[in-house]
Every structure is written in structure tokens, then in C-alpha cells.
Length: 557
Image 1 (cartoon, rainbow, N blue to C red):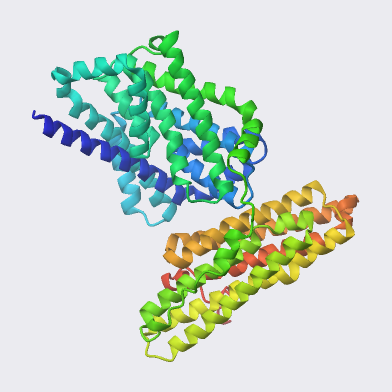
Image 2 (image 1 turned 180 degrees about the horizontal axis):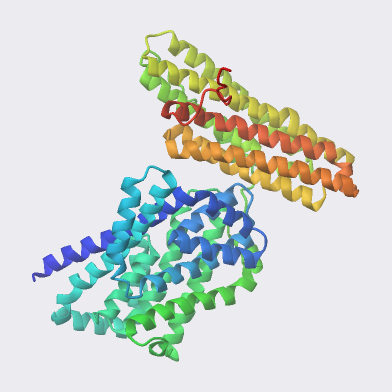
């Protein structure tokens, strides 16, 4: 077979592997996104739980990078501590290695089963969760099929003249192999896919085990580089977790490289064949990294804060957003399609302003700092101005000729602008007043009460991001998820209310002291969440997923 044909087959098999890993992750996020967020919330309760939670999430998503991006979102919202996030990613790295261990077994018989079952579930069933579960099963089938194709494509290379010299060079030059592994993993943006390919090459005899070990160590470094690269445009609080994880992984990989270069490691003893030995080495490396790094998460927290300190002027980002040029383009008022797109962009900016004033409310409730409360109220003035500008702009657009769909979209945007403005008022005129009262009276919440309020606030921040995504994407599945989240928020608020009353009955002093404040604050967070969810209603009404009335029809007697 011609060498170019072999490369074409290998490239096709590689792309199928990347697509398969992405398919599994997409299906998991869509079908069980709430389960993943629950795992992440549970993981915030200590480093050991964070490590276990990260491992479970990585196995489910088949990607430590996906876990890292979720953690970055939580960290940016202020609901995930840096040291806990570092423990979470250490567990995710180990979970990713466990995925490689599972997929490296001889499961070729399972590929057609997964393709058939997954195809039936995805194409023949109507329920979203069943369809997305089918997508996951299809993805697993594609992974197994791609590994078979990689083996078939590389078979002719065994007898090639170039391969022995290349393999020998990589086996002798550990540093080059290490760097190739890191760069290749970063390029394909999937450590699972990269490591599976290296293992397949070693198992096929295309590469010696001596070359596979530094390639695997480099792939571990490359896996850390992926999250670091993807988070580079995020807030500093979000960037810190991937940076800390990258330092842990780079240190471990370099130490491992030095060990095999100087004293040698009995990697061949870890398995019955070179491929199995390499997979087990990768698993042992990540397990050792967890054990060695977990006690140093606190020290890494301090180091990363020095490397990536908070901006000297914390209001710089907020001021840029407040004073950013309006997206309302007066020149396209006579073209409703363009004008509505312009209004949507400005409404997104308004939503980001509301997020700015929602994000610090728990810190303000704890500290009651008058200067910071004044700054948040200043941002609320910008929210009010954006609300006025959007309403007047859309009123001017409505005076022209519009289709029924454009008129309906204009009303939807106006309604959401009103709801965002109301959400800002709840914060400025209610929650901030409560924060100031607490600071003035020096009241203290019970530990249980504070945990409940923090959980409500964390879910509100997640739902705010989801609501703004729905505003722009108009995605039906995201809209459904947002409405489901409303019910869960209501359940959380109700549970907090009931637990608070039980603490009052038991005579908990802090609960008695902060009773009215606790209930009002929890109610305010729930009301803001309900206002955000309204962005999903028009989408669900149009699709038939939302009834015009909750009242059941009563038959005539």
C-alpha cells in the first residue's frame, strides 16, 4: 500500500477517534448535565470529595479538559475555591487515565453492539435523555471502531524501512519524544485520544515501549496545556485552576522523565504486553500524582495567587462593560432583522451587567462593605439606563413594517429587558439593603443557614449563564433545562425555608437573630432566578413544551 494512502487512512481513523470522544462528551452533557453539576457542587465540600468528584466526572465525560472548563466556570462565579478546584482536576486527570485503561481492553466485539444500540436509541426514540444517551453509546462504539481502524491502517508500516530508524531515534532521545507527546496532545485537544493512539502504536509494535513512556509523559503535560490554553481569555479566578494543574502535571512529568533517563523504571513489569504495560504506567503515574500533589494544594493556592494576582483596580472590567459603546445601531432601525440582532447584543450586555451585581452579593452579605455596596449600586444605574435605551430603541423599530415573527421577537426582547431591570432592582433595593443591615447590627448566620444561601447563590449564577446562552442561541434543549432549573431552585428555597423553621424551633441563636434576613434573602435569590428563566418561555411555547395555563381542564358535569 502506498505511504500516502496509509497516512490518509490513519488520518481518517484519528479524526473518527476525536469525533467519537467529542460525541460521548456532548451526549453526557446534554443528557446528564444536571448530574454533573450536582457532582461538582458536592465536590466543593473538601479536597477528598473534590478528588473523587473530579474522577467521576472525568469518567462520565471521558475528558479531564471538560471537567476543567466546568471548574473554571464555577471559579469565575466565585463558588469554587482554588485549592478545591486543584483537587478536583487532580481527580479528573486520574479519571481520564481510568477511561484510557477501560478503552484499551480488547472490546472489539462491543463496537457493533454499541453502534446498533446507540443508533436505535438516538434515531428511533423521541425522549431527549434517551436520544442523548444513545449518542453517548454511539460515541463509545465509534471510539472502539476507530482504534480498530488505527490498527488496520498502521499494519503495513511494520515492514517499512523508515519506521525502525524513527522508533529507534525516539527510544534513544527521551526529550524529543516527550516534547512530541506534549505538542501532539495539545494539537488534537484530547489527552484520551492522544494516549490511546500512542498505546495502539506500541501494542502494534510500531513503537518500542522505551519510546512510548516519554510520549505518554509528554501527553500528560499536553493535557494540562489544553485547559490552560482554553482558559486564557477567562477571568483571573478561572485561569488559576488550570495554571495550578499545569504546574502539578509538568512537575510530575519532568520528574518521571528524569527518573526513566537516570535510574530507569520497570515499566515492562506493569503488564503482560507493551501496550498493557504502557496503559498501566499512565494510570499509576496519575494515581501517584494525586497522592503526591493533594497535600500541596494549599501551598499551590498561595503560589498561583502570587503568579496571577487580582487586578489592582477590581472595577476596571466592570467599568469597561458599563461604558462600552452601545450595540444599538440606529442606522439599521428600518431593517427589523438587523435591528433585532442589535437589540439582542445590547440585551446581552445588560445581562452581563446584572451578572456583575449578582456575583458579589454573598461577599457583601458577609462583609457589608459600604464602598463596595455603593459600587454595585452604581452598576445598577447602568442596568437601568440599558433597560431604557433598549425599550426606546425597540419602540422605534416597531413603528416600521415588521413580520409577525419579528414583532413577536421584539416583544420578547422588551419583556426580558424589563425582567433584567427588575432583577437589578431586587439586588440594589433589597439584597444590598439586607447586607447593610446585617453589617450594622453585626448579626451572624448559622453555619447551616449560610451554606443554604451559598448553594442558592451558586445555582443562581449557573442559571444566569445558561439564561444568557439561551438568549443568544435560542436553543430548545437549553431552554428546557433552564425551566427545569427553576423548579430545582424553588425546591432548594423551600427546603431552606423548612430547615430554617426547624432551627428556630430548636432555638438556634443565630437563626433566631437572622430569621427575617435569611428568609428575605433566599426569596430574593429565587425571584431573580425566576425572572431569568422567562427568556426560555417563548421558545418553549412555540415548540409546544409550555402550556399557556397551568390549570387543568375541568370536564362539564
